[in-house]
Image 1: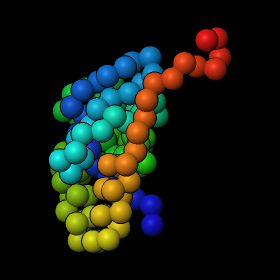
Image 2: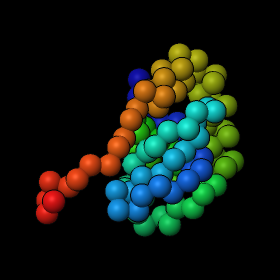
Image 3: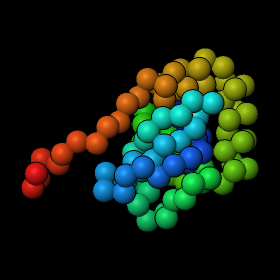
Image 4: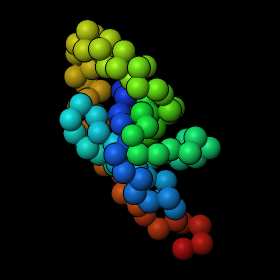
Length: 98
C-alpha cells in the first residue's frame, strides 16, 4: 500500500534543487519540494510526503488527523514511516547544462 505521510518543514535547504528538511515521526529527512514550487513553502508548513517527495501542502489540523489515522492503520503507517527514514535525496549536477 502506498500512503502519503505528513511532515513539517523545519528548514528550506536548497532553492535551486528544491530541497527542504522535514520532520516526520520525530525523524528529520531531506525531501524534494519541486512539485510545490508555487506554494511558497516556509518553515513550519506541513506537507504530505511520499517516498521523499512532497505531494501537497496541508494545514496542521489535516496533518494531525492524518497522522492519527495512519497510526490506526498500523502496518501501513509503519511501512511508510520506514520508507521515509530510508529515503535519501541529495543534490546532483543537472545533466542539462552542467
